[in-house]
Length: 169
Image (tube, rainbow, N blue to C red; front, side):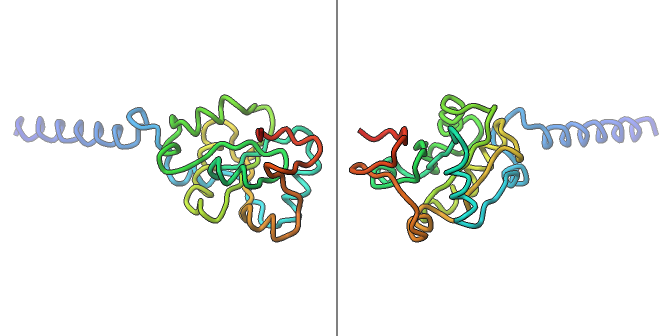
């Protein structure tokens, strides 16, 4: 009788420990999928255009490759590439670079290109998770190619919009 009670108590302790370990995020910096969905989505080209052109000192992140960025980007964008190798979790090089370059005191806007299908939803979720939160993180659901097709201005290595502080040499 006493042995059954000890086994029962031991079993409950094991179940409790397993539940604690499975719910704890101490061993991993990878956010859960639900937290990655926490950001504002901008679907219309004109809405994104209004944000880019009307917000002074906008924090605009182009997550495409450096080569794609040099070929053309939305004015005022800063290139911080997001790819499978550098944006796997909240302690990744991508997140560290975002934290280094941008202020959490202002909203942050993120866009990618057709080639960044997975990163287009994952990167904004990471940015939201590392500190900007769902109310300060905005994702342009269309992409750079949609911006160009809509006829909006772009910066390239040969032409820039006046005042664009882009990194092109």
